[in-house]
Amino acid sequence: MDFDEPHGRPESATIEHLNDSTLGSVRKQQHRRLAHAACNQARNEFRLQAERGFAKWIAERVIRAQESPAP
Image 1 (tube, helix red, strand yellow):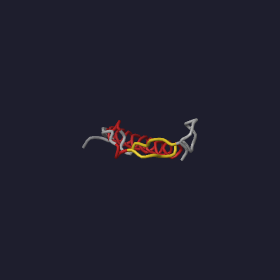
Image 2 (cartoon, rainbow, N blue to C red; image 1 turned 60 degrees about the vertical axis):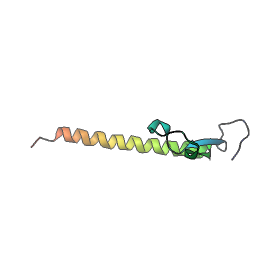
Image 3 (cartoon, one colour; image 1 turned 90 degrees about the vertical axis):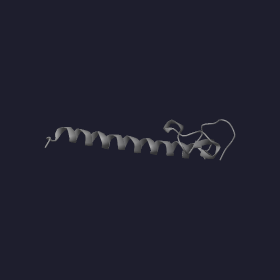
Image 4 (spheres, rainbow, N blue to C red; image 1 turned 60 degrees about the horizontal axis):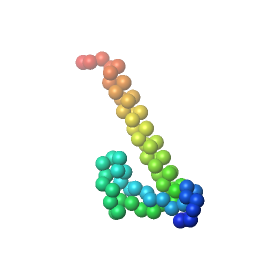
């Protein structure tokens, strides 16, 4: 892990938030750790892909429920 400037390189040190504050988590020291910038970015992208996939899955179920005739 590299602490030298310039920051933003794949091997640069970043702070990774284990419990995302946008999801209601309290920002506490125990919820953070050091991570390579590339690892932190990959983890965030994986989480976003999972969220998008789940939202798509829900939307498809809603459409199917609306299309099926009521009993």
